[in-house]
Image 1: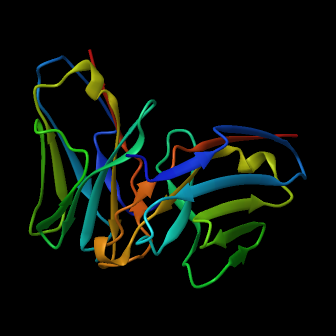
Image 2 (image 1 turned 60 degrees about the vertical axis):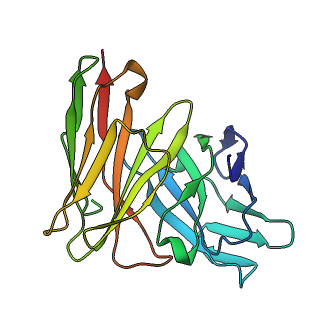
Image 3 (image 1 turned 45 degrees about the vertical axis):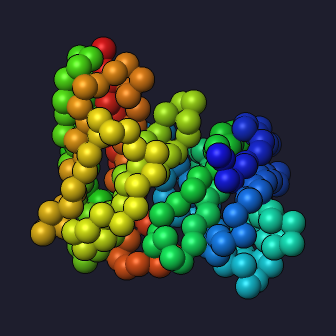
Length: 113
Length: 113
């Protein structure tokens, strides 16, 4: 059972545009929601993370919006750059499970120059 | 560089064979996780260790096993390999139990021919 659903599967954005990736989760016990960025040939790397006690977290050009009642969260990349081209994974975990992550399916982002 | 070291980077082996993948976590990290990344299944959690003890199993086949040694490095053993086992295998580590950043290695690409 896929507990975290991610969309879109792929996304093409022009340089300077806004990239938006959405995720929905099922398990209300999840209490930590990170986003990971993966470049070809590399392992996933933490980009930004949020806990359900806040509705938004911003770090530079990256913002997570979190809607607890809808069980949805999204990643916004402002002023997207060609260097942002990568695969993005949303994930979820719960305190009692350590840092074990349930991942979404991934979104391949391409930012055209 | 995440500080998590995985060896080997690439492995090509025949069906029916057995291989061992090795992971050295970041210095001081007590938790180790193994994930499998394939094109059709995305990133799937396999197994989790904390300070030498197995803590959780995910979608890990009975043909697969793992262990974490006293020096905290971990090995993932894959036996009776099938073509469908071809995938990227990632190790991740985190410093403590609970929702905290997990650092991923660069992965081992396994090809079963």
